[in-house]
Amino acid sequence: MMIKTAADLIKAGDLVAFPTETVYGLGADATNEEAIKKIYQLKGRPSNNPLIVHVNDIYEAAEIVTLNRAAEILAEIFWPGPLTLVLPLKKKAKIAPSVTAGLKTIAIRVPSHKTARALIKAAGCPIAAPSANPSGYVSPTSADHVSSHFSDLYILAGSNSEYGLESTIVDLSGDCAKILRYGFITPEALSEALGEKVQYKSGVDIKAPGMMEKHYSPRAKIRLNAKELNPGEKGIGFGVIDLGGLNLSEGAKLEEAAANLYNMIQLLDSQEDTTNIAIAPIPNIGIGLAINDRLKRAIA
Ligand code: TXA
Ligand code: MG
Image (cartoon, rainbow, N blue to C red; front, side, top):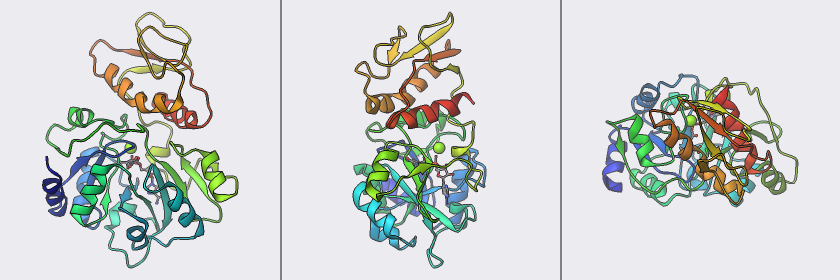
């Protein structure tokens, strides 16, 4: 599919899956309530779980949210890229009510993926997009993952997701910055940028599935911190712990492991004879925090 075709579909109120640097998104015109409702319906997503809006720069963001100093600093350093900011929604912003699930704040990000940016520009509207998977399942990092779940969906195919994990979400709507979801942008990087310690805060006010215990789960049963393979299991190793099958990163690089994680899980999960997957321990530092966070939820 061409970018113009995808943009015309978005403008007409249709859904289009598209690549981003984190995971594939299921996009719709964020100003069109009917279109946004189709996202919740297709994903089987609870209506109390708000969406992330994608725009191309901080000026487009400023039409939707009230920026503050912390937002300007983080945007300057990390946009375009895998960082989502939660900020107060401007009253006059033309955002469909279902995007925010009725909240007074909205999650917004500026993606770096070329195709995502071209789509937003051609559509001429902010694009709301959750990950393009059925609610509760692992997020797609390739066009094939998307089509394996949604055979009738329009897909703007592009490269595989470079980072392979959903964006870091930082809430800047309160007195101090809080990490709502770990991702490629680490707590250390955020703390350094803002000159204050930025921490993860669980149990936020909204009961959002992305932050709830069980999420990101494949069909097969996962066992974590595996140092060897049990009978009936397929393995995903890391570094020197090789479980006889796939390896997230032979050189024990966390970036590489993050980029491979969902892809390897979905590869094994798509094989009919897979019932159990064993995954080697991942160090709980830097990007490892995000990897372990997703794995913990996958087995919850
Ligand atoms: O990397 C990503 O962020 C991908 C790509 C497509 O951009 N999108 C993504 O969307 O991961 P989704 O819907 O799977 O996750 C959105 C998360 C949810 O956990 C939701 O609860 C949270 O963002 N969220 C949205 N609006 C919020 C708000 N106003 N306050 C707090 N959390 C919010
Ligand atoms: Mg998701």
